[in-house]
Length: 166
Length: 413
Image 1 (tube, each protein chain N blue to C red):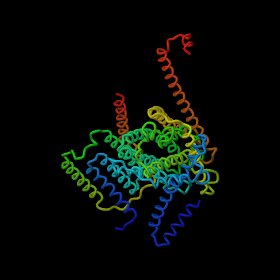
Image 2: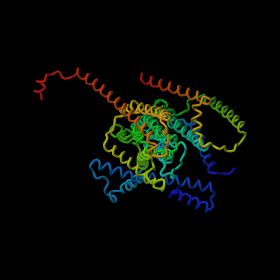
Image 3: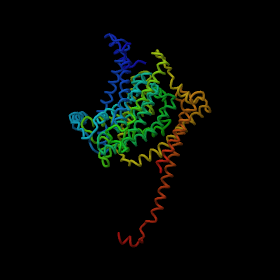
């Protein structure tokens, strides 16, 4: 294996993602855990860039780092009692670790079986965003999930407004 | 279509390959070099911008402004920078070190990253990704995280309050910003920045003035400039989220705000004023950077102007204005634009032609009429709301009006 700028970038991003993930589960401070989560999500966005999927990368940054991470961080910051916690309160962590390991093994098994080692890089079509957009509104592809997600988000938004008005 | 910058680029590639680098390595070195030059140029132009802003503000307020260091005080910012560099960075007791020191870095980073997709000339652009407009929205949302980190890690209630206020405002104004950003993208049919510029033989501001206005207002709010400067309300929360920062750490927040202010001018110029387009660019592409900077600085002057003459709006009014006026208006505008544009395509022959300026006029006229109509309806709606509110206030004030007669009032006076 030759070392190219892409492999170096991949190594750095992998360290970001895995290190961030490790930080999330090992931090005692909840805000630190949220910030490590942001780091891990940033690493994933970088991996999308390396896979020549800039649209997914931008959406990853916009939705996960710009919206969900901010939501999680604010929720933690305004929850009063959560800030003073210095020791791990969840006694079920061995169970969680076991389930996580099981999921990792299953996913690894499936992915490795699917690709059977390394695959050559496929050519990314230059109009991949157009294809994605067309797939969202095509009844043969993802029209139904797309519309269901829209309705779900709308319902959540209306619910949030109703709760806030009370 | 050769211009100075591509010539420099190919010369440098030749130089690196002559020194024994492989083409891939040479390209990588060139990319890193280009990123470094672009990022430094953005921060360097800031030194001029801060002086420019202080000078223009001073003139608006009938003062002279900086006038001691160098001719017209032009080196004042350099002196200020030297001072800020030499100051101690004080870390308050109980502060959370890692987020505290990371926050200014992320704040500057989120702003510098925007410049990667700003086209200076037809050929000079950091990276002409096919999602340029979306990229801008994505990276500018990182700034919110920096503000949260700064406010929380300072261990100061004013900083935390300021951060919450700022985040509430920034997240809210992102909605009309993104909605109106969709309009140039829809009209062009591409998110690629260079294609958006190339499509503007008639600048989009003249086709869609209302969209441009909403985008500009939302952008100014995203920067936190007057009249939306609740990010640092000196009279209410001392200084907002960066109250505990000093020395160079503070300078980075300051630089981030100023660089963001300049970046939105560049984006407005690119998305609505035709970026590098101008007479003679087809022959000499290098001329594009002159037009681009001219438009950007014109907008920057406009920004400083509004900053100098407008007072701050109260936070609840800012949120009201965003959620109950800008968001519905931009939603209606997007839907109406899409419907009219699609219908006109099938009704008017030659609607989508872009061969010459005359051929583009029907589309421009239709879109302009739609825009003006939506704008007039919105103004009429706001006027009606205001009148109703005033009538209600007058009706309420009758019952508590002074009951003394005109004669006693005269005597009392």
